Image (cartoon, rainbow, N blue to C red; front, side, top):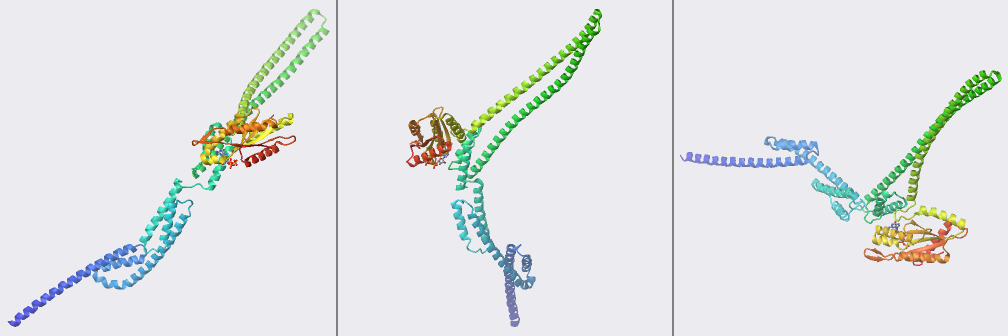
Length: 517
Ligand SMILES: Nc1nc2c(ncn2[C@@H]2O[C@H](COP(=O)(O)OP(=O)(O)OP(=O)(O)O)[C@@H](O)[C@H]2O)c(=O)[nH]1
């Protein structure tokens, strides 16, 4: 009984141990399975991260993932591991090299961005800091991507700046080009209809706030206006030439028609003359031959009626000739009247153009071309009647400072006021032209050496007394004037040189004065 009971208790104990072992085994299995599951998940993540870099590695990781999920195939996993490890190492090396290359690429690209002209200071500073940060190596692709994004952002800012032109600062070369264009515009005479637009353009070209795009636009506009003018002038000339050609063609047709008609009439007349002569001969013959008075009378009457008939035909022919001639003359007159009207209007247009070409568009004073012409005329005149002629060159003092302090358009208005004042201070026989910039040339005939100083000082004082007020500031504008008289035997251009030298002296003797050579 005791043996039995001890056996039973041992079995019970063993049962308990077995149960405990079973439970422990189940726990081990559970633990193993959950670890394998975690490992499988890790491999899944890893294969996702590596996917696409290396096909062999992708396959191996996929197989590993499947085998790890299946305990029976675990021993197939182990031999694969060293190979997977090798592939992973090589992949790491490849990625590190690529990241390094990427970092060099970003560094180079950011350097190029920094070289873009006129980068805003803030952007340039940001890119420099970015470049400093790039000096540290990247450890993963996740560090690389934000850098690329950052650099793209900088690039966008540079592009935007270019597109909107917000900060495309105007360089000295642009300023020089705009000054040259403004000067060119001043030298070209535009028709009245375009003057306002050209003046506005000129104002913008001299403005401190001029943009590069505006400069390009100005070039484009001026070219367009010039082309329009050339086309208009060309078509006006073509029209005139066409009218002239048509008129000449119809004159030629009329002349040749009337010539051929005259030739035909001439032939007919010759025939009629022959007829008339032979009829007169017949009359004379009959007088000689016929003695019988009655018979003679009859014969002569016959001849006379034939003669009358021929004379009437001749008269009709001559009347037709006169009528035709009259018609030709009328047609010719009409053609010539039309042609002369056309010529007159063309001449007026040419005259208008010539006037435009000789006027300075800003001040409406005669320009340099007009001055050259007038100097030649005056020179011829004084050689002919040996009278006096003075050339005076007047230059506004420190004009640049007016532009600089109050703006170019104030400078323009000042030039207009001074031009008007100069014109009004001269007599009809005297002449003033805008020579260029802030320089004016006066041609003064028939004034003695004694009076010229007084006259020019009066002009100088007149300008000085103009009450200019810019930005509520009273400004006195003065002139320096140099003058010379054309001497006997001297060419007028040499006189001009002397007047210019006198002006130079006036400028160097503290300005606001007249110096006579
Ligand atoms: N507003 C305006 N300025 C002009 C025009 N033509 C020339 N100028 C300006 O005239 C100025 C002439 O300057 P400078 O030659 O240095 O002479 P200045 O300042 O008058 O000095 P001085 O002649 O030595 O007394 C320049 O700034 C030109 O840009 C124009 O049509 N309009």
